[in-house]
Image (cartoon, rainbow, N blue to C red; front, side, top):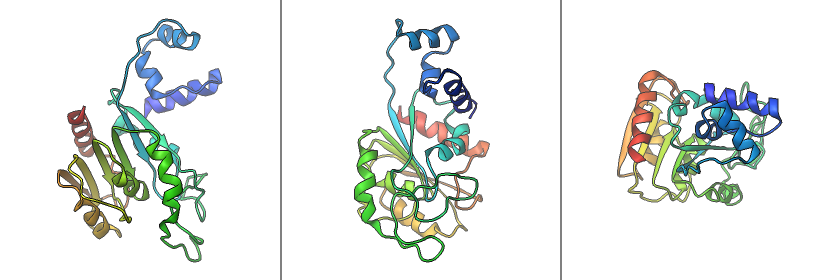
Length: 222
């Protein structure tokens, strides 16, 4: 989380987008300045992992949620995407720009699971060509649709088009949450899955125990 916060502060100071990957590639002020000036620097190739937010949320919100999970995994280029589709209803609490990967109608008066929009939102995710995928809720469902080497699914909901996968999967959910049966149904499509249950509801777990599990799982895929 500290790296994400530092990247944002530096971006606003120098009027240039600075990513966590930039900070990891250039760990000293001298190297960072050289990278801005086009100076000589080693070219590091990181595996890309796309991170997909849930309903009525966005990439920045998920980045904040996952800060403690990814901060020690600089060997991966974490790409937090925001869906191009504006949410059909108000943003979730404490989020200013609510987006969704699919849906129709109004959230407050009759939102429906219309999956037609996936054909418009999924290409932007596939264009990243990620090695790994991480997703929460709706984003977990989209992550489950991708062709990639590994994935982490936080309380994924079920979506049409899922198929059996042999790649490693870390699946998390709360046994008492509203969507627990859908989470388990999504998990059934993954033969090589590791299941982590928690008591945080429909959310991304961020406790020390899960952070260790997450980091060990991702490290094993590299």
